[in-house]
Length: 298
Image 1 (cartoon, rainbow, N blue to C red):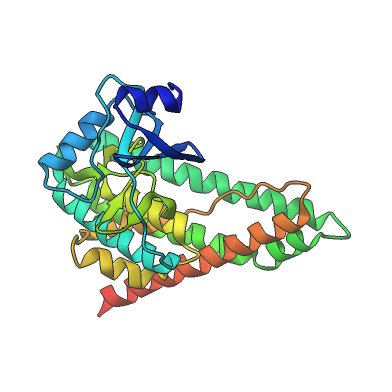
Image 2 (image 1 turned 90 degrees about the vertical axis):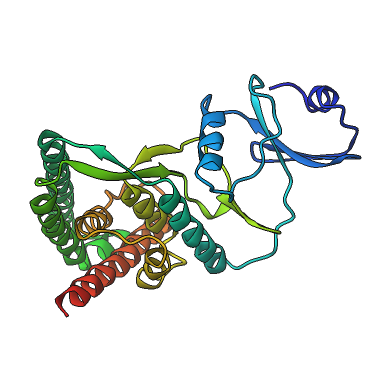
């Protein structure tokens, strides 16, 4: 990327103030305040054009030239917000994104079967991983706090594995009869730092955007932000604008219920925090799954 002075000169901007936040260069000039960052996706122009074409306007104006190695956007003066409020706004915008970019893609039985088998194999792999941890810890006379916390609550992990298997079976029963699946443009990077709320609300950092099932974006949102959201409440916000079909809901739950493999380090305090976060996540997602099951039974 060119130097800040070179960029400013190229756009006839007179620099008054400059700062760098992560990868982003914020330049205050006589003409206005702008953000520059390295262009990580050569197709970013196509993403922005597609969004505009589909009447999705919660995206910043691109001011850079197509052949430049960086993105240039106006700087937004953000309104101070709590994380829960930012997550609420992000969920609302996500539902609109999926609603405005939906289309259907042909899918074969082989593709459905392959996804199902991969999911089941992954669940077995995770089950074996935690079984081996239990066996190893049983051999230890003394357990660290993180090991003790993990073993004491291990039944929760095995329960989520069983529930994930249950919901992927329900998904497969319906999906194997389908000849197409619903797709949308997915943001694919739903961190709370990637929403700006000022005069309007904007999703930023589209470099990982792709076309896929909206379920994957939704699952990513919940996994990334589970500490600040209640799944049932936020799902209702999403569903008010974009309803999932029954098999999509089963797939969402199957994905969310798949446990992560904890990797322990020499930092025992961090290990204990990670185990606690794992169980916090599991308790929230199991509650969400049971809520949906109970709602469906009515």
